Image 1 (cartoon, rainbow, N blue to C red):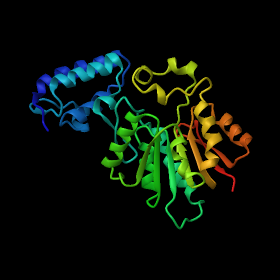
Image 2: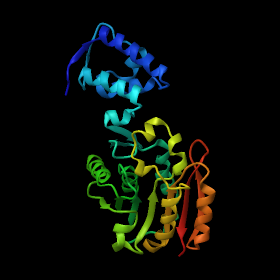
Image 3: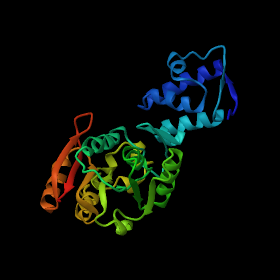
Image 4: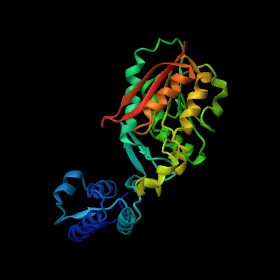
Length: 299
């Protein structure tokens, strides 16, 4: 619904100032265009050409809120995704608030890895169970539901606020009947699925506590600490997933986590040392960083 209009001349003056604010504070000016595509009727090309003269611009947000929102982005380093209330992830539009971590582009590769490895899975005569542990916004759960049309996906998070957002995203993307939501820590609420799960995927908190202060202000000031703090060495959650998952996964069940640069060799060694896994693999992201580790339970 349109919330007013502004003349192209007035908008052009503000836009020039807003761009300079971004540059002065080390923010990519393209973020301004991203925000304005959501809050006005301007498209990407018009914004790139700055072709604002001799027209009225329709506003999807009040002019006061647009100006206030951009100041907040610049001065408080508040993420654009939270201002817009949504982000794009794979082919999904994902609702986000500061109750959930903003889904990253590199995390999209989790679903690509699952799809690539799926050809090796034995065919099943019944609906498989897949699990997204620490679901946050529910993005990974959506990716799993789209990949496995016959599967029932279980999304787990200890945050009730995060689960509320994840449920909304499942409904918005027409997967409300394919994803079940459970509140609790990791495998804790899934006792009824012991030995029945085909695959587990997780993007757990993996930042070592000593490195949290070095994160970008957009992250450490505004995104939920619960989704970032991986304990003293960053592997607190990962170690628990390694230890507990064999109880819940089928023989030959798939295990996949995202981790930070430098952690993959340690995670692979922990999997080997547990004696419960085989086919341990390290996967790179598009920047060549060792970003994911996968394995299968013995079977």
